[in-house]
Amino acid sequence: MDLGNKAPINAGNQVHLIDGFDLGMPGRTGTYVLQGDSLTLVETGPSPSVPHIIKGLKDLQLDPDEVKYIVLTHIHLDHAGGAGLLLKECPQAQVIVHQRGSRHLADPSKLIAGARAVYGDAFDELFDPVLPIPEERITVKGEGDTLTIGENRVLEFFDTPGHAKHHLGIYDSWSNGIFTGDTVGIRYHQTEDCGVTFHLPSTSPNQFDPEAMQISIDRVLEMNVDCIYFGHFGKSTEPERVLREVSQWIPVFVEIAEKHYSDNDPHESIQQHLHEKVTNFLNAHDVPDSHPVYEILKIDLEVCTMGLIDYLNKKKDKS
Ligand SMILES: [Zn+2]
Image (cartoon, rainbow, N blue to C red; front, side):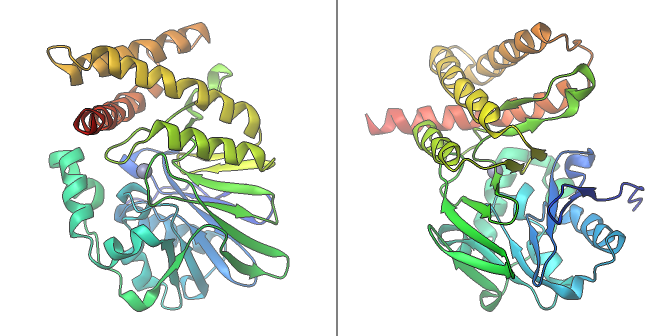
């Protein structure tokens, strides 16, 4: 496997970001490395990212043996699927996860089935292998819990549903920043060359809840953090702008889904209208139609469409 030459990104405050090349693409999903008394990683990405993590640690002159904690924002495979494989390289490490996620780490069969339903034939290439994690290596954290990883560095955990019910927000006291996984959306830095970085909600199946998502976003807004560390991808130092931007898109996504839910082919139709809406937005910011960001948007908006339909199906069943 060619791991390339990309060095870990220095995000300041003794945080580095190792690119995990999820989907074979740069700048998609990464692992944050928090240096201090207890070497801590946040997110692993899927198993194919593990060799990148090991190489990134070496680049930082760190030994996988020293890793004390592997913190997972949530258990979707593009964020946590590699945890079982990575643990084999990190004999001291304990995995930190939300209460609702722990049993699926110990027995990933449901996770695998869920991801196969979303990703189909691409599953093996994207996620294989998903290894079970021994129960004694799993530590559960929830709302208000803390983890001291250095003399002046405490992580505090928040329940942040909306994207998934098994989602933690992780506040870092040292940088006054928060690791948000997918709850407050995706950061599209790929258009930086056009002078714009934009953010969209991630409405993946099968626990998307727009109201819970907005409440979680409002909680992060109230924290007055200096930065947000995104699951996809990188650090933003404009938390307020970003959180308001994602808040504005949530009802737009839901309205498009509601409007086209009864169309002949709702999947095709909703996806197309989401695409159109985002394209209009990007055109207004002078991003050309040929820009590579559209490759990524195609994948993301397809998954968003699945989650929106799933949300509306459940809403209909309830009424
Ligand atoms: Zn997710």
